[in-house]
Amino acid sequence: MLLLSKQQDWLGNIRGDVLAGTVVALALIPEAIAFSVIAGVDPKVGLYASFCIAFITAIIGGRPGMISAATGAMALLMVTLVKDHGLQYLLAATLLTGALQIISGYFKLGSLMSFVSRSVVTGFVNALAILIFMAQLPELTNVTWHVYAMTAAGLGFIYLFPYVPFIGKILPSPLVCIVVLTAVAMYLNLDIRTVGDMGELPDTLPIFLWPEVPLNWETLQIILPYSVPLAVVGLLESLMTATIVDDLTDTNSDKNRECKAQGFANIGAGLLGGMAGCAMIGQSIINVKSGGRGRLSTMVAGIFLLIMVVFLDQWIKQIPMAALVAVMIMVSIGTFSWESFIHLKQHPLSANVIMLSTVIVVVWTHNLALGVFVGVLFAALFFANKISHFMYVGSVMNDETETRIYHVHGQVFFNSADRFVASFDFKEAVDKITIDLTHAHFWDISGVSALDKVVLKFRREGADVELIGQNEASATIIDRFGIHDNPEEIEKVMGGH
Image 1: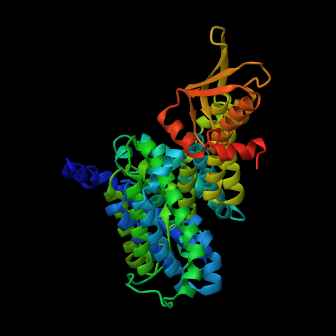
Image 2: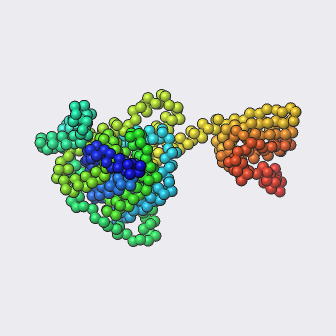
Image 3: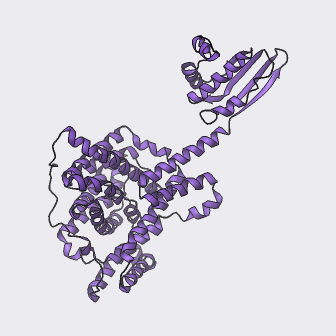
C-alpha cells in the first residue's frame, strides 16, 4: 500500500507534473531574484535556495505538489541581519532556522493548525491574493503601452487557450503565455523590462560551504533572534499553504512531516549558500492550476530552475516581465476567495470580523504571522464568549428536605465564572444547598475559584452545602485547586487568623 502511494506521488501524473513544474520554474526565477534584492543579498542566494528547498521538500515533504522556495515573507525578516552582520551570519541563521523547524516537527507542532479556523484561512488566502497583485504593480507603473498590451495578451492566452480543442487541454496555458510572449518580444525587439533586468543570473552550480562564523555563544545571540521568527513564519506559511492545497486537490497531507521537511530543506539551503525559505502559495496554486499534483512537479520545478538559470540563462533573460506579471495576476485572481463576498451576508458577524481582521493586518503590515495571530486571537475570544452563553443555572426547592437544589449546565471557565456566581441567591433563608454539577464542566482555576466563592458565601449565610455529580476531569481540578474544603484556606477567607 505504501509502495503504491509513493509510486502515485512520483509517477501517477508524469506529463502534468513535468509541464506544471516547468511553468513554476519560470515563475520562480524573477521572484527568487526579487526576494534576494529585498534581503540585500546576491540574486544567486535566492536562486540556489529555491532549487535546494524545492528539491528536498519534493522528496521528504508532507504535501505532494506544494512548491517551497525563497519567499518574500522570509526575506523581509532577514534585512537587518544581512545589513548589520553580512551573508555568512544569514547562512548560519538559516541553518538554525532549519534545526528549529525539525524540532517543531518532532514535537508535532503541525497539529496546531487545528486551532486555525476556516475564517482565518479565508482571510489569509484573500490577503495573500491582494499582496500578490500589489507586488505586480511596480511592473505596471511608469511603463510604455507595450507592457500593458503584453500583459493583457498574456491574460488572454491564460484564460482562453484552455478552450482551444485538444491542445488546450494538453499544454498549461501559463507556459504557453510565457513562450509566446517571449517569442513576440524577441521578434519585435520590444524595449520592455525582462528577467535579465532583475539581476545577474548565476553561471555555476551551487557548492557545499559552511558559514564562516565563529561557533560560540556570541554568534548564537546574534542569529537566534532572527532564526526564531524565521522558523515561525516559515512553518506558518507552509502549513497554511498545505491546508489550501489540501482543499484545492481534495486530499490530506501530513503537517508534522512537512515541518520536518521544511527544516531539512532550509539546512540544505544554508549549506549551499542559500537563504531560508518556505512554501509559496502563489507558485503552489500555479502548480495545481497547471496540472501538477505529485512530488515530481516540485522536483522538476527545482531542477529546471537550476538548469535554466545556469545553462539557459541567455534565453531566460529574454522573458518579458509582462508575461510573468500576467501569470501572477492569474494566481491572484485564482487565489482570492470570491465566495467570501457572498458569505459576508450569510456568515455570522464574528466569522466576518475574524476574516476581515486577518486580511487587514496582513495587507497593512505585510506580516503573515501577525495577521494569522490576530485572526486566531479573535476566533478564540469569540468562541469563549459564545460558549459562556451556553452556561446556565436552574434551581428547584425540595420542600420535604427543605433543600434548594441548583442544577448547573454548561462550561464554567474564565469567561462564564461571573455569570455562574451571579446565578445563585445567597439571601434566601434555606438550611441546605445542593449544587448538582452532573451537566457542568469546570475548565480552569477561574471556574474553580467561582465555585469556591459560591460555596463559601452560602456557608457564611449558615447553609450546609453539598456538591454532587462532578465528572472525573472537573473533580480533579476542583480537588487540586479548590479551597472550600480546606480549613486553613477557609479561615483566611472568612477572616480568621
